[in-house]
Length: 445
Image (cartoon, rainbow, N blue to C red; front, top):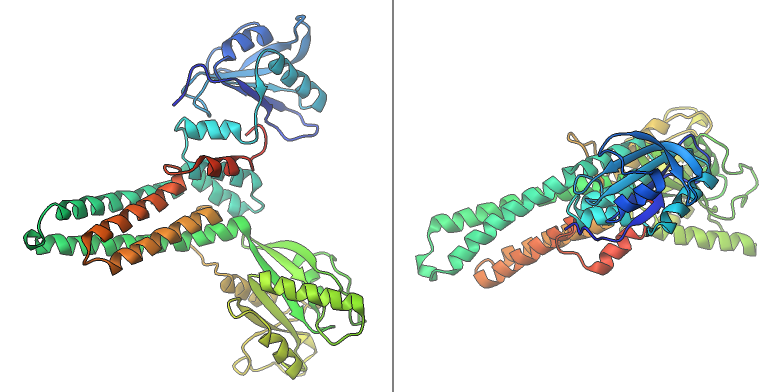
């Protein structure tokens, strides 16, 4: 909980560069003395006070707004002072240095949010969503991060934990009695609770995967023989000329990456070198990188010439795809066909990177294959750490079902399930994990 003598930290909370307004944030137990020396007095709580920011000689460094939030009603749960001045780099550093001279120390990355977590202002999932909101690259990702910050994700986890605790209480009560005294009603209720928790956990995992896609995006590899239109498709999807397009085979020799978004989902498109037999050492190095990218992709788009169809060489390329990575056949140059193809004969999408024909269908298929689904309720942001914990909890529930006739083992699996779920909100989190999480925050947040 909040300690009145917590050391005072300070940092510039706005991004580097020039701006109309810049903010220096201070938090800790020494706010009163610092404010008196810097501002002349401690501002009234939660009121915007226009004042001078003074140096050690009483000279004015800057003028601006001071906001004072006494503990525990602040972001960190400690006394917090925010100084809003002009957004020039030099003047902000002068104000910050004055705070440091008055006894504050420079805040570490994410230290303000870490203190908010340690003071029970927010849980760990909400703390992570602060960074996710700042780093969001799409509007949908930003909305989902805001839902997590508001507590939607945490509320789902807490609801699961409440039901799990009820099940554990029932099981522990049943352990206190000989087997012959256990009521059939208790066993039926136990089994029903277990099935309900499993179903809700699976639903939560499905929503979390959507949130993970919004945060991390998906990596999509454009693969195919030379001159099938991979670079043209990349340019068409991105809306700009990011790759050279030429009739000369082997033009693309290195992986070209471009980030696009479809319905708010960020997609990392990778244009790779054309696959063919070649004596060119540089081109062969490019094709080697193509094979490496394919292994790391979430989806592979195999581009084919619509007029030529899927040849023996293309079939050989497909045989080299990892079995656990989905792939989609994309027949390009469909605008050159004399008649429309019978889609029932070919499992794939027909497009024209030149005219844009079929691109809407391609975009929908890409979203479908990477696992994106429209959610009736709002998606909350999720990280890989959250998915690992959720899947671990689900595996412990599955193991609990397997040892149902052995109540002691069943109870232990339920305990491990609760521990896995609680790690998401930070109830059971090692200090090294907290350090790793908050070290990725920007300074001042």
